[in-house]
Length: 239
Image 1: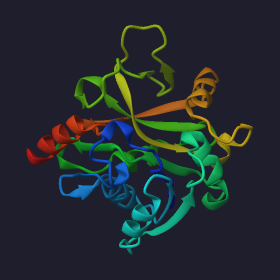
Image 2: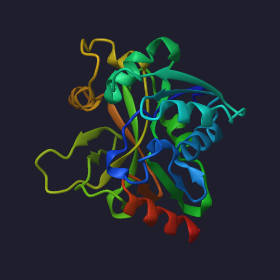
Image 3: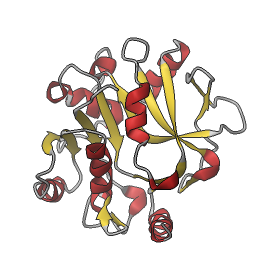
C-alpha cells in the first residue's frame, strides 16, 4: 500500500450556502455530530496515515488558524489565501511549494460519511488502489443512491477498469465525487491562471484514460447548507 504522509485540506471557501451558520465562522468550523467539519476530515486523513496537513485559509482565516493550533496529533501548515480566493486548482497551485514532490491526498471539508460495518477504511483502500505511474488522479466515490445533501444527478460512470467518465449528456450517473482524491502535486503546474477549478483538468485526464475512481461502501453526506447539516447530524445520531 502506498504511504501518503501529506494532505491538502481545502478550507478557504466563503460558505455562502451555509449561512447563517457561517455568519461568524468559516464553513470548516461548522459542527456536525459534536465535531467541526475540518476535524472530521483531518481525523479521517490521520487514520489513513497522514501526518501533515496543508490547510488553505481565507474567510475568517484567523479563527480557523486558532482552532487548528489546538491539534497536536498532526502537523498543520497554513497556505494563506487571505488576499484572494483561488478555487480548488488555484489553491493546490499556491500550496505547491508546501506539498513536496510525492503524491498527496486532497480533501474538501464538507464531506461526512458512515462506512458499512462501522469501518474507517475508505481512504486506506484508495491508497491500496493508487498507481502513481498509471493514474493522474484517483477520486473517492459514493453511490448516488446513498448520498444526501447533493442535488445533482450524479457525477461519474465507473468502468470495470476503475477509469472514470463524466456524466456528460446522460440523464444521471451512478456515482458522486466525495471531495477526497489522490493526485500528483504537479497536476496543476501547466495552468497559467491563479484562480481556477480542478474540473477542466479532470475532464482532460478522463479523456486521456488517466482519471480513476475508488468506491466507498456506505452513506455519504455532503454538508453544504444548514438543511444538509441537520440531516447529517440526524444520520450520525443513528449510528
